[in-house]
Length: 48
Image (cartoon, rainbow, N blue to C red; front, side):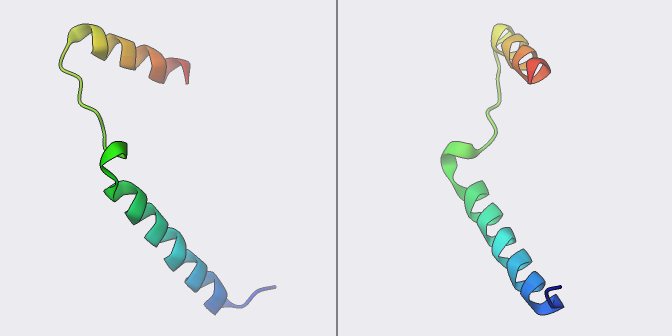
């Protein structure tokens, strides 16, 4: 069984990766303004 310290270090590394991924401009949420695009987005989300 691993100690508590390695798990804390791993958690810190995972959080750093999530922060770096969120900061990439290409992965930010896309806001749809056209009704057809909103409908398509809802359909894709429903199918997923």
